[in-house]
Image 1 (cartoon, one colour):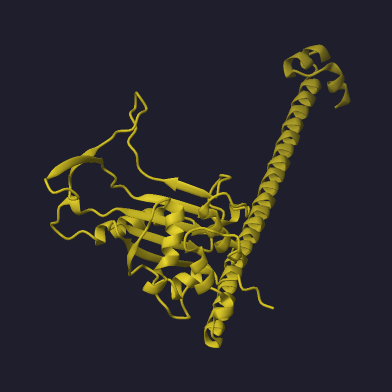
Image 2 (spheres, rainbow, N blue to C red):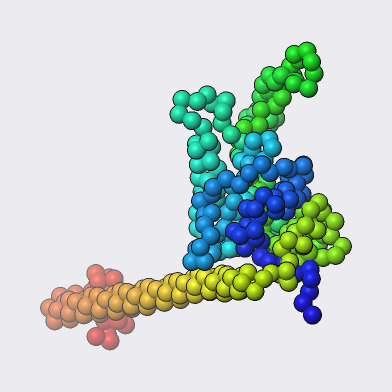
Length: 320
């Protein structure tokens, strides 16, 4: 009997299910658990890889959503290693900012961007499975953060009142390293990461809306056509991962072979240098012996004097 708690891969859900407004509650539950605040999604915006063809690339899936605070939130799943991944994250948030401010608009219109990345490859060193990053100005001398505030009108009261709020304009980044998660549930977001990693929503999970994920993403609820497309998607994902791994192994093998070739070349060079040095040594010895023989033939100097002149021992001269 098929396990009723087994759900589809989260990247498949992002491509084909979670864009439907009726399923925003799943994304809202996931983001609320991660950000530890109540998230309400207003709309799904067009993203770089929002395509629905079965021939799409399967290495990366992303969504761009807007929440009730007008923040733009990038949610991305990366299956395979990418050399300049952090640079692309920076480019992605910058691109969203630029595309959402009109020409000639005030800088006040700059949008707040959150980037949430779910990665399945080893991204740097570190033993945690959730990382957070942003931009902060720290005093060079006192090591304290710079707090910049701006004036806001409180619209909840009849008479105009103003309050000062801390500015929060820079992009924020969340990195979820699925491979580092050890299936230990300590917080609501852990339940979602467990689902993403294992494809299962356990009966004891209580995070907000995760029961909706179990219900709407359940594999056994799929039609035959949906199951066919999903199975094909899994095959394509596995195939692409195999190609990446094969390319990596071939690259390593080529690197090893190149290293061996360089080692052979270095050994050959050292051998040639040693042979050349030996030849030069033999040539110098031959010249020295020839000069000593000529000195002996002239008979004007004693063995001791010849030995001193040429810097050799008397025994050496006797052996010539």
